[in-house]
Structures are given as C-alpha cells and as structure tokens.
Length: 491
Image (cartoon, rainbow, N blue to C red; front, side):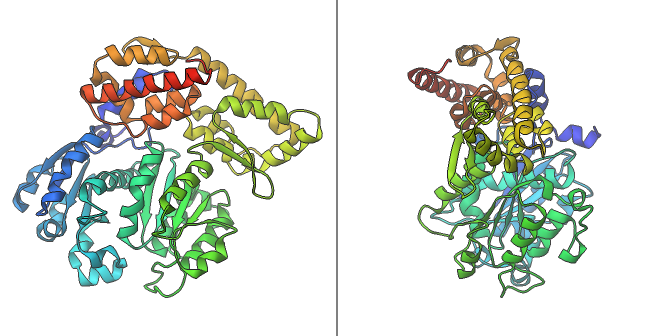
C-alpha cells in the first residue's frame, strides 16, 4: 500500500477487518478524513452538523473566509463544500494541489443551475467549472441538511472510483444533466445501498461512455477488450434520463442509444429510465420507466433496486416476467435448489428458469451484496446447465453454510454467534469499538450471512458515535429479537 493510500484509509476500515473473522468488502478504502464547509448561506453552514452525525469518520470544519481555506490544505482526503458565493471567491486551483485527494462540491441555490446542462452552465456561470459535483438546494424540498450527506458520499465514491479502484467494486451509474434530479433521489438511493456500492454521476453521453468503456465514441469500443477498459463490469444498475448532451446536442433522446449499447455489451445490468419523455415508452420492455416527479416514483425506484440489483430479496421470474419465487436469504435459496434438483417436470422447469440467473451474474451479485464474498467469486458467472448447475450451487452453498455456523463475529475478544450474543456485547462494549463496524457495514454483512436480512437493512442507515449509536443498534436488535421469536425463528 502506498503512503498516500495508507493515510486515506480510516482507522475504522482496518479495525473492521481485524475485528471479525468475516471479510466484508470495503467499497471505499479511502475515506474523507475531513470535510470543510465554506458558505455564506447559513443553512449550508448549519448542515455540517448533519454531516458530522452521518459520517462520523469525517471531521467537519467550517472556514470563515477565503484565506482561511489554506489551513485546511493538509495532505488528507477531504471534501470541500461550497455554496454559490463561497465557490465564486475560493481559489480552488491552489486548494486542489498536485495529485491531492480533494473533491469540490457545490450546493447551489440558483434555480437555473438546478436545470441547466453542463456546457451552458459553465458558459453562463463560469464558477461552476470549479466544482467536481453540483447539487441543488433550496428552502423547501431540497434543504441543505438533507442534501449534504449524499453529496459528500458521492464525492467520496468519486475519489475512490477514480483513484483507488484496485479490485472489483459495485457501482450505480446515473446519467442525467440536471442537478435537481440527483438531489431528489440520491438520499433514497444511499439509504438503500448503505456501504455496499458506490454511485457515479455522468452528465453527458461522452462521460457515460468513458466510464463504461473507456472511450469517447461508440466506434471505439473494442469487442475483445471492453471488459477491461472501463468500469462497465462493476455497474450493477443504470439510471438514465433520455435527454442529455451528446456532442453539445440536447435535442435527441440519446439515452436510447446509451441503453442500446449497455444492453448489447452488459445485458445483465438492470436499467431505470427516469424520464417523462414519450420516447421512454419505447423502452418499457427493456427497462423500468420512472416518470420524474410522479407521486410514488421514488418508492417505485426503491422497490426495483431492492428486487433487481441484488440489494434485497432474490426475485426469480418465470419466462413471461411474472414472479416465481422471492427469496429472503441463503437458506430459502438452498430449499429452492433442493426442489430444482428433483427429477420431475416441476424440477426441470425450475432448472430452466435458474440458468439465465447464473449466466447473467444474478446469483453472484446477490451473494456479494449479502456478505458472501467467496460465493460471489466462485459463481461469477456460471454457464452450467440443468442438474450440473443445481448441484454446483448446492455444493458451494452447503460449504458456506457450514462455515457460517462455526464462524463468530468477534468484538473485543467477544465471540458472537447469534442475536442474543450480539445484544449482550452491544450493551457492554466501549462504543468506540462498535463504531468502525457500523461505519463499514460489518454488522449488516454478518446479519445478512446469518439470514437476518430485515435487521441488516435496519442497521445500514445507522451511523454515529458514542451512546447514541449504541442505543440505536441495541434497540434495533431488541426489536427484531421479539419479531423473530414471534415468527418462530431462532435468535
């Protein structure tokens, strides 16, 4: 590990890996050590408190004038958060420095900027070119305290994707030119994914192609090498508008072209079209159509991400698209495989249904997202057929289940095998020992592996420090112990 990378990794990351026999994937090895807020807008300045609570690994500080920004230019991974006035007067060239791990974020209160493509925005408001990421804030729906956390999270993702992507990661690619849309749904998206995946924002067709394939034009895609040239193999979901700039043109639905290319090279990637354009209906057999601004659209987005990107239940569909099975955990998947292994008409139909899920990485992605890293690596992808596929899946799952039964979560030498053990430890261990495991989703990973997916989901948005964090985690465990007992499930 390079010295720069070592400085960027929070103590929480190393503590998390040392504290548990499980090996949860750390999506962002480099964390922001600090976030600096420089804004004239009082609401933007006050939003720093929300950031400090939600990202406790980050020290949040306020700068009072342009010259005071210099004292924050230490050799640390940092996010700089500006409002329009702050960014206008800031000398970002000096702050950025050579090869610095710094990302500049604009929380803009300008309604025109909220809805303007990048090239026009930079022409009319040149200061916006200083920002790496731009988000919309206002006094009503997009108040800064709601936007600042997903904004800084996306900045941390951007830094890691660009500079520290040393192993396979999981990324939602968002292609849209309007900051207003990012600000609307990113809080929802991050609430779903926790620390399991990153988000990458592209605002033009060319940016999207560079990210997916490492080229500026579709003619440059190399069919023999496309997997190794861009980040497309890491993408687990594409959320795209239909109208965004391509070569400076905004008058054609280039989103259709992008989706066609993605479906050609990465048919496994689920696509969400976020658009009210009539052309969106042409894609309804290939994507979820999500009209922007419709009541309930964000809830629809949430359900789709849970069901089709590996984040929630494993949904098995019949060839006609209807739902065949909804599996909450690995034990339910094993039961389905036993049924599929029967020498019967029903078994044969199930085996046929499961084959495309193996081939398109649906099993491996679901395993990755639920803490089964080894299974994800083994099963990525599988092109076995019929009984061979079912038997292979059952073999590796049985091996993993045996490992889970005998492998505890370890906190401060305390060995935890079930929810009652976890509750006891949460109530007596120093909260500082708990925090790194919460920051990095280690608790949630372990809970997923132990087939407590609902409690894992409840843990993922919980961040903080001290007694407040301890009480939140312990309270969630106590609640779900009662629920699982009522269901007759061992705790």
